[in-house]
Image (cartoon, rainbow, N blue to C red; front, side, top):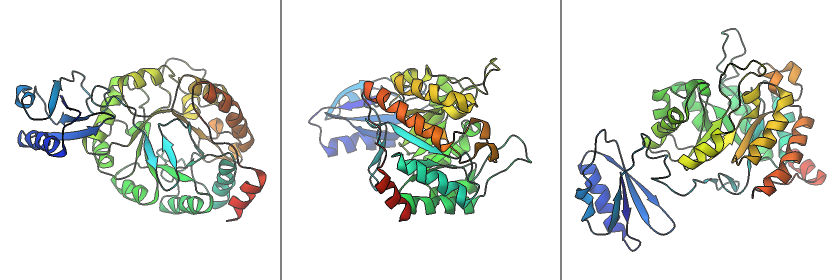
Length: 354
C-alpha cells in the first residue's frame, strides 16, 4: 500500500502517517517525489485497512500495490533511482552511462595497476575486481581475500577509480563493506536471503546480479529483500541466463532491460562478459545493451587474458576495451546518454604518476 501525501503536506503530517504505520506493526518507507511525498507500507503479509489513513490530515489518496514486490515497484517510486557518489561526482542511473571494468579476479599488483591505468585513461569511473571468488571447482583460484581488497584501495588512491567487488558471505561482507565503494552480490547468491538481508543493512550501494535461472519477478523480489532492510541503493545487473543454447556460455537476455525498467525504478546495467562467456561477443552485445537503454555496462578486462586465473575466455585485452568505449560513445549519444571522454595523453600520464 502507498499513501500519497498532498503537495502542501508538512513534515509533521508525514511523520504522523509513519507513526501510525509503526503502531500497526509495519515499516514505513518515505519517498520524496518532485511535487509530493509518498509513504509506503512494508512488512504486511495481509491486506492493510486503507480507511485508517484516508481521513488523516495531509493524505491525498491511498493506493493499493498489488505486485508481490512493493519497494522496487514504480507504483511505489515512479521516478528513476539515481545513486550518487559525491566524493567523485560519479552516478549510476543518471544521464551518464556507467561503465564498470576490470579483471575478474585481483591476481597481483602488477596486473591490477596495468588494467586500472588503461581504464582511467578511458574515463571509466568504476573498477571491478574480485578479491573473493565463488568457483564451481574447489581447486580453482578463490581470490586473494583481504590482500586483494587492499590492492583495490591502492588503485582507488592512485587513479581515483571507485571499487566494485563481491561479497560471498557474512565474513567477507564485513571486509568488502570496509574497503569497497559498491558491494556486489553474485548470481549464485541472488537467492541467498540471509546475505541479502545483511547487505540490506549495509551503508554502501549494492550491485545485485541476476541468478542464472531467475525470472524477472524472482529477481525483483530478491532486490526487495535488500530495500526492505533499509538500503535503497541497489543496482540490477543482467548477466545472462542458462538456456538450451550451447554456442555461448549463457544467453544474454537484453529484453530484460526494458522489462525491468518498466516495472521498477532501480538502475539496470548489463554484463556482456558473463552474458556470453566469449570475448569476441562482448563488443557487439555492449553496443546492443547501450542501444536497448541499459544504464551501464560491467566488462571484464585483463592485460593478458590467456594467462588469467579466472574467466580468461571472456576477458578483453586493454586494446579491445578501448574499442568498446569508442563504439558505444556514439550509440549512447543517440539514446540520450553521455560517456566520459578519454583523458588526453598528458592527463593520463599525470594520473598514473600520482
